[in-house]
Every structure is written in C-alpha cells, then in structure tokens.
Image (cartoon, rainbow, N blue to C red; front, top):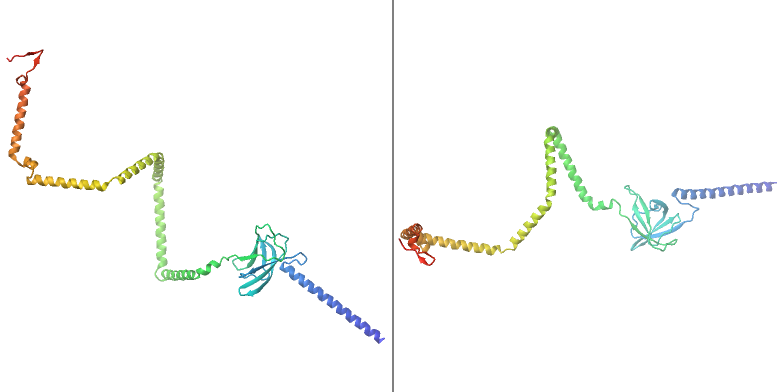
Length: 323
C-alpha cells in the first residue's frame, strides 16, 4: 500500500514537472515571437539576408529600419567590427519583402530627422543581374544636415558673440541714454513724414497721372524711332571708326608747322623784313600805288565817255572819218 502511494506521488511530481516545462517552453516561444513582432520581424515569413562592409558605419545600430522609397522593408539585424586595420564594420540586413535587388544597389546610412535618428535607405541600381541571398552589396553614408556646420562652428560662435555684444549695447542705450524716448520720437517723426508724403501724393494725383502718361508717350515714341536711332548710332560708329583710322598725329604736326610759319611771316611783317612788310610799312610806296590806281580810274572813265577817241571801229570795210 505504501509502495502504491509513493508511486502515485512520484507520478504526480513528474506530471507537474512536465507541465512546468511545457509552460516554460510556451512562455519562451511567446516571448521570442512577441519580441520579434514588436521589432517588426515576421517569424513565419521567408527572410532574405544581405550584408555590407563599412569603413565608417555612420552610427548605424542593430534594429535600425531599412526603407525603400520611404517604405519599411526590413531591419538591421547585426553590426559587428570584423577588422581593425583597416577598420571594417559588417552590417547584416534582413529584408522581409520579396523584391528583386539589382547587384549595383546600395545600402545608405542617413539621418532620419533633425533629432539625429538613423535609418538605412536601400537605393536600387540599374544592373540587369540581381543579387542573391547573403550577397554583400555596396554601401555608403548620406551626409547629415548638421555635418556642414562643423567647419562653421567658429564663425557661428563669433557671430553669436557679436550679436550678444550688440544686444547689450542696445539695451544700455535704451535703458540709460533715453534711447527709448529717442526711438519713440524717431518713430513719430517717421510717421509724420509718411503722412506728409501721403498728403503730397494725394494732392498731386492728377500731376502724377500726367507724368506717368507723358512717360508712357515718351516710351512709345522712343520705340517708334528706335530704328532711326539705331541708324544714327551706326553712322556715329562709322564716323568714329574713320576718325580713329585717320592719321591725327600727322594732321596735328602739319597744323603746328603751319602756325609756326605764319608766326614767322607776322614777325617779318612787324620788323619790316620782306616785300610784304615794305608794302605795309612804306608810305611812299603806298602813295604811288594809290596815284597809279587813281590814274587808271581816270583813264577808264575817259575811255567810257569817249570810246571813239581810243577805239577805231571799221564797218563794212570803211573807216569812219573823224569829225
């Protein structure tokens, strides 16, 4: 009897142990599948694994989402340092979607947003051959928006310091040097000036309209005569070309020589040297010439009055007798 009781107790204990074991296995399975589900992994779907080797991983981490044109298609399942000289970092991706990936496609690590989140973008290539599972594809890093600011940190710091100094000075002016009152007066003056300008414009609307009309007419006239203006400009260009081609230096030299020669003639006239000077300065010669011209004038008058006295005209072969 006691032996049967011991056997019953042993069976009961074994049954409880089996139940506990089954429960633990079931719990572990639920935990595994639940964790994968929360991570976005489908434990029952076919998985395609691909790899990339980075010399700089760009901060990619296990669990980062892989996107294709903004659509999540997988996860980063492993990031591992496989070589230190040179540095090589292996990244493993699991792709849950059945897509054909050309062999020249790339996995690119990039910033998700301004807060610094990291994602992986799959950029499909154009190769006619497609990658197989477990193939290693090319990779790269897309520069983040803040990468370009590293070299500008010093300049930005100086600018911020200058802005801070200006702000302190402006605060001092507004607080201790009646700056607020002066600023208010300035704004008041500007307001008054704009009001006056508005009044002037209002009072001269008609004149302004006439001016605009005249300008419009002028522009129309200018448009109409533009062909003639082009012709005039062309003529001026031809004249300028002719002048430019002319030997102006030779002309200037000849003119200068002529002026010098004329100056010599004037000097000779003034000093009494030469026939012209004698003609101008000799009164006796001038008087004789005047008398000669007077005698010639008297002769011409006498010839006009008494032409028969000097001219013997024959008509039909006969000579007219003097009376």
